[in-house]
Length: 93
Image 1 (cartoon, rainbow, N blue to C red):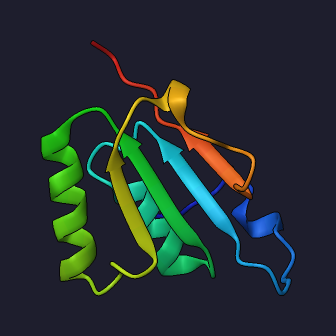
Image 2: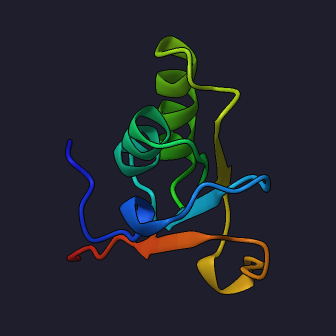
């Protein structure tokens, strides 16, 4: 997966840790692609507990579990002030 349009390529190197979040992360593929291709720490928030479990297992399987974190949570209750980049994954019911 090629990440374009997420603003990650425009981030300038710095001494502080770059954090990116995907709200509605689903199976975690955007977060995992971000940490795989950019020097960021990724966070995924998803309401579906099974998808969060799958994302955690995939991060562990690919060796990215120290840089990719997934949580079950409501996107309206997440603190955004410490994040460097973010995305919202739309879905169709």
